[in-house]
Length: 279
Image (cartoon, rainbow, N blue to C red; front, side, top):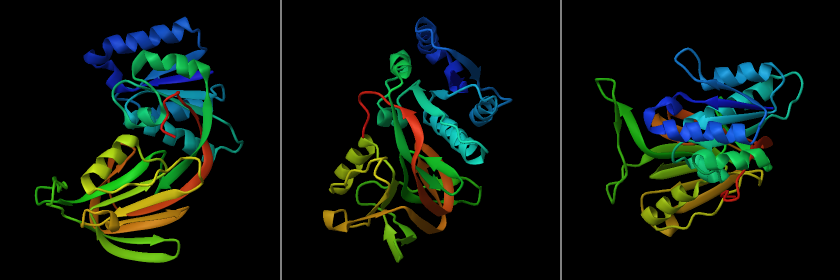
């Protein structure tokens, strides 16, 4: 049985027609389901965790954006880790707008995703773990960000030659690497649009990663902006430390950290995929 979680963003007026069509398609296909809407009194995680406790749902469908998808996946994975009895709960995603996770999984925007959900073609994917959270795609660090005196974050974005590198200490495969980087990606699956953007900006060719090869890929770019400045590692565990809190993009969601502990959990999440998936 399906459990649909509609994030609060789906109530915005500009998505009204799109959401109505999703609901119509779900009903037309007679998918057995229950649904819930995120409000100010609950969260995606809370709704998913509550639903899984009932032991009647075998598939959770997140309807919303990248943050919605990541929150639902984290709830499923936490429940799996804490459950006394193993349950294979599948994850599906219907993006309501342009979405990096949606593109990776081959899920079109809106109602076109519903027939794909109903066909239930699934793959077991590796899942990356960063500190206490999970990710399917990648964690990317591009530039440093510090608190100013007014407690506001100051972004130092990389444009052209005005690179302001981040000083990092990386512990990977028994090696300690300490250096300045302009770009660092720890990938289970690096999105194609992210890959294209970085290859163009830094004039390098990034190796492809897949969420089914049992490893994480670390792509490290210094400040020279040439192919010789690219270093790649593959590992199942690693740690990255920065001198101060930096902004990291984890599957489209920004977090502030200065210590990043990574590990890989192979073939952990059953995910419904579309025909245009990126792996």
